[in-house]
Length: 153
Image 1 (cartoon, rainbow, N blue to C red):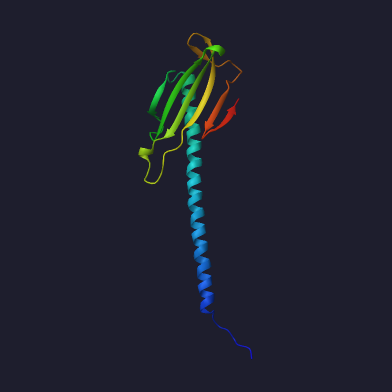
Image 2: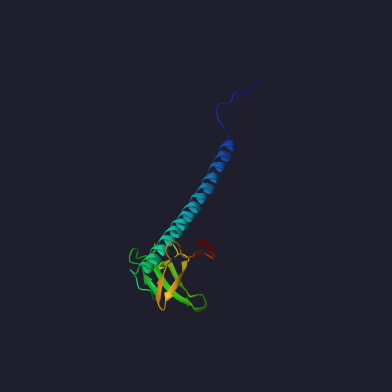
């Protein structure tokens, strides 16, 4: 004799509810991780842009070529920067190192500051203290983020 089923059993409902709940937990964790990595990628992009802008201002003469320690950036007050000038006497070069990081004090609760991002550019010195980039030849640079370096030529 064949039985006609019109509804699900209690066991099937419990199993379906457990699968649904487990899927929701996994998807919420993936969304959380995705948001965290999105924030990191946005910070890395912003830090790279801010480093390049500050270095360009120094090379163009808008900002003085001098050491700066932990100053807020004018274009984004949530970020701080430092500039280190290192003359290399043997090679007639000067290394200009710009480091930026997000200040953790201005961030919402639960967000940490960023790791420092550094852009280094070696400039030839034509005489004494004057620094220039030869026409037609871009000075070498390297971008250091979180312990990795990317050479830019």
